[in-house]
Amino acid sequence: LTLKPPEIEKKACFVVSHLCTSFDFMSSRWNNSIGKGRCTFQVKETDAFTGGSDLVDYSVGMVELDKESQTAIDAPEVGEVVDGIKCSLILGGEEPSSRAFNPQIVSGTETQLYMSKCVKHICTPESLARVEASNGQINDTVKSLLLLTRPFSFC
Image (cartoon, rainbow, N blue to C red):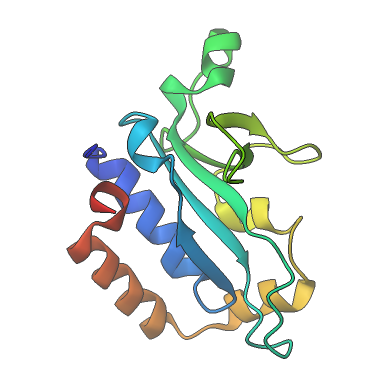
């Protein structure tokens, strides 16, 4: 069990609650073994609006403290991002044959302040439009439930 810092948990809860109307999420087997400064989860565009096909694989999302990131280590003179936390899609290593966590950023993507900017590479424009048009009440409800249950530290 690895308790994540409150700021990481809050950001991860925001990410999931913000994207919940168009994306499916699943836990990552690496989340409890990668330390306190990082949080990982699996994410994919939901198939609820496309006929229910499970053909799309999950991608791995990561929320991490900027000061502990590889980019901060490689380029400390650049400084920290605005809230000190950034998001990215990573290779992860969720396949059953993988024996190690892989924090390498997916080719063609980059770290962002918001996960919605990261997932635009793995989804349709319609899914992002649903996210932007979603009712704030559902987002707030999901966020409240996540903050209460703390799945990023306890699952």
